[in-house]
Length: 606
Image (cartoon, rainbow, N blue to C red; front, side, top):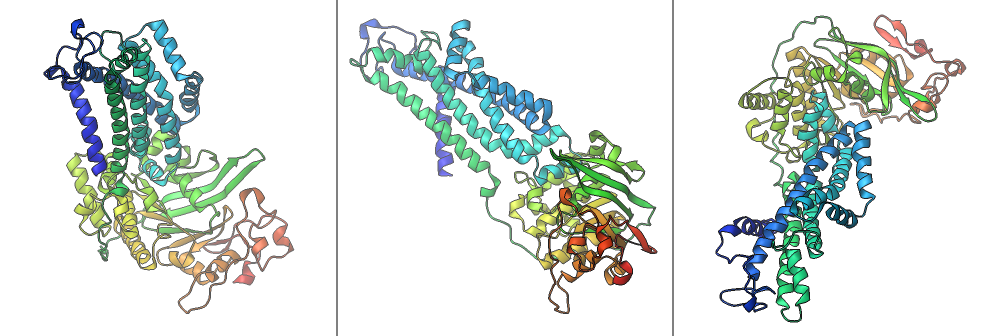
């Protein structure tokens, strides 16, 4: 804080003096008194007089006004345009990215000083010429800094979470991405401002900047060079002012960057263990909320087209929990992202349909999907710390989710946000709504993500491994909360997990995925009691049990989409494989009423 205070006081004092210099009791900086030229400091002229007898202090103060006005105007113009180009180019990509980045490369091809000299020579010296020229010179720096920051932020879970809530590109860029790249922008602004002061002074020193007799630090340094042997202090004063200003500006922006970082603010609030309030009530089922048929995803590579998800079909009723289970790489998360319309750019849907209450999600454009995300369907991501925006308070993030779909007064939206936090079992929700994500425990953060997801009462909630990063006790509380919310609101819940014992506590129906396809499906109780696929049985054996039996790991790994075996995808790891398992891909067949399996030997397993 001392560093922030000192830098703010220094820059503030310099700026205040520059602004208030017309009101200060100093002599006219243009008044010539040749009879007293090159005199040293005196009571009437505290810093002495220059080669024309003009007051040095007055010219120094008025020079600060000129130099800072040119520097800040040029840096501000470059910052505004550069931030806009960097945000649009980095987030939208494609043609906008090419225009924003490549046009800056053209400017960078020219040496800055040479370009400035050329422009000033053609257009003439003066502040009106310097400001746009300097702004163009510093524009590529802002574009590149923001562009690089956007590339590192746009794939973060909290950005995807805002898209899942239905926020548009402009809102995401301004409210979610821009605050996260503001630190580097502030640093770049300090560098550009300090550099602009130096460059303006240098051009003025060469006679190509501010036009005499207007006061400028560069002009003062240039004039003092000729008389340095007779009056060396004339060179010292503008150099000291220039150095002090540059150092103060850099120190201020570095200090502000650190001060605005929420990770440097305070400590986490004390943790208290609470029990979620259980509310009765079950809305009647009215047919499937979501029905997916034949979902297939494709990734284009230079070698070949690969399909990380193939022919996946799902169905979930109102008030029901469908668990999608499998190891990492099985395609669970990609399936959920496909339903939300949040697939990575390289992945596309090539087949299938996904009806949400009669609307095919896979056929909707981005604008239509945005209206549904966070409203009719919502998603909870695995890591709440990465999903929540680190520079916004959690209450404000829930308010933003509400305002994306509801025209509410700010006070009403805030009250609803607090009510949502209260509903998910967060104690003292009014105070917790004012916290940053890093000030909350892992369980509190996940409850906040759930509150954000249910704020608009979605019909379908997709939970992507929401308990993976939590300890066992908190896991149980989150599972109870999700089950309670499902019953209370009658919403459909898709619960993605890698653990069958975890889903046994919450699921009504289970779909087991392996290597991008469904290998078994059925009612949770029946499937867990009697699996009909070797992979399902192996998942059950690999999990800890209450009787203390040691888990048995599954040998090998899930095959990559581009290296799938010819026959059954699980055959290389299966102890029951026979020759016909490797001859061709087994179909997903009905083994019993309500039970599907992709195994040729399911009868022997049962």
